[in-house]
Image 1 (cartoon, rainbow, N blue to C red):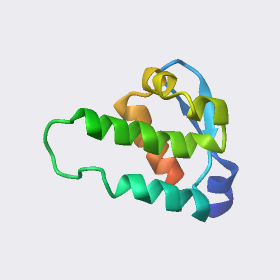
Image 2 (cartoon, rainbow, N blue to C red):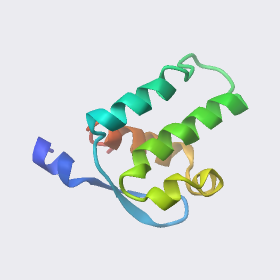
Image 3 (cartoon, one colour):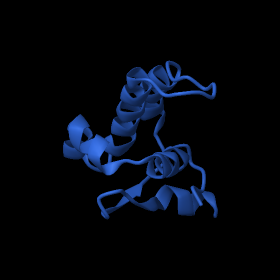
Image 4 (cartoon, rainbow, N blue to C red):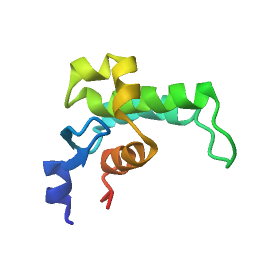
Length: 99
């Protein structure tokens, strides 16, 4: 996959069955994202509510450019994300091939 392909977006199927096209973060989005990402634990172990809240907040930033209404509804985000989808979302946001 080349850079042009990545900027065209990556289609990801969310837990609700909806396919959404996710593009890499812009620098402006990355600034917001990193404030959240820096609070996320990277060690292995059990996840806390705070960890999950940070996951939802980071997903909200990524989805914000594609679907602002969805990004503002944290409960709906919780309903459409699972760990596999979240991982694919983060990979696409960072400009990596989630496959």
